Image 1: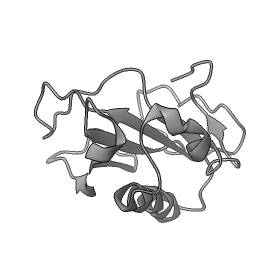
Image 2: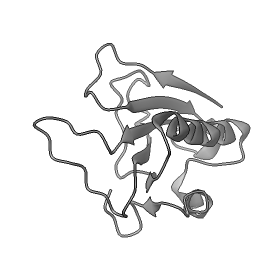
Image 3: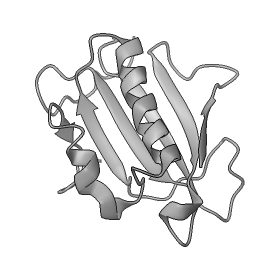
Image 4: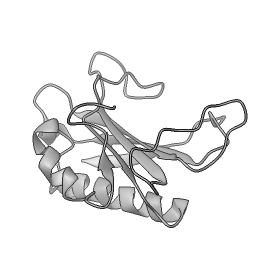
Length: 139
């Protein structure tokens, strides 16, 4: 039950984003690794459409996917669709958003929060100030 940040050799965009690989073999009998993405929604990127905000004031987006056990865990990752969890939320800064996500990763590592979809209510309770991207499916 560990997590580690993946830092790409070349960032995909100029916007703040983070990726973590999470090992949680206890969370599901068929796969034991997950990828967690955190994106900034406020940076204007030339030539790209602005992100869709599903609630006014949202600044960051979090997505959690199980990883396909038939492929290596190392990036580029092969995620299983759809996302296990997805939220948009407001943070005062990129650092505050990252800190919030690291708290979730630490809870997964401690075995007190499962990345599996059966535990969506536990995740929803941690994002009452945001908006879920699932449950009807915008993610």
